Amino acid sequence: MEGSNNMTLPDIKILDEKDKTLRKKSMEVTFPLSKEDKKLINDVITYLTMSQIEKYYEKYNLRPGMGLAFIQLGIPKNIFVIVEEVDKEKFENYVVINPKLISHSEELIYVGEGEGCLSINREVEGIVPRYARMRVSYQDIDGSRKEIRVREDLSVAFQHEMDHLNGILFIDKIDKKNPFKDKEKMREI
Ligand code: NI
Image (cartoon, rainbow, N blue to C red; front, side, top):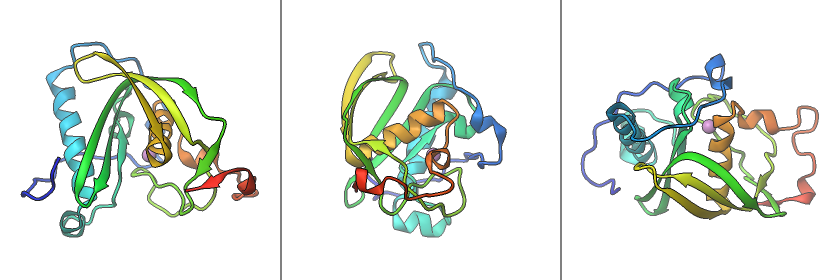
């Protein structure tokens, strides 16, 4: 999606970490998707895109985010959306339904500046270990089974969102006593 034309901010409400719904395990999605789910997917794509474009995040006071799972909207379905900025205000969208991890690298990475989440409205320091690369099988918006290889940031984003589907938040993965534990065993990105 290109962010140059005027976009309208979708009216979506993102749950905060205090909401227990985020701890629910999401359920397998059946096809065809409902009109409502399709609309919501489009709204999430628009929202995430706008949140990464300066003129919109300033205007609407948005926190930039590249991923959102349906459970963050209170809907326990195995669906998430990732909008990755691949070039200046050029975005690649991923609509991922019923994902399954096929394989992953031995190598672990972590985001040096820390991970963020649109449901966690505070700074959290520490290392969240993630696989550097993964192969994931998923269904697209029409229900076709696809396979994707992801690496680096995109691999982190997929793991972060797949965790949401299991009721897991990134803060759960940070060692409470020693947030930078095992740093030397992983590569910083
Ligand atoms: Ni999140």
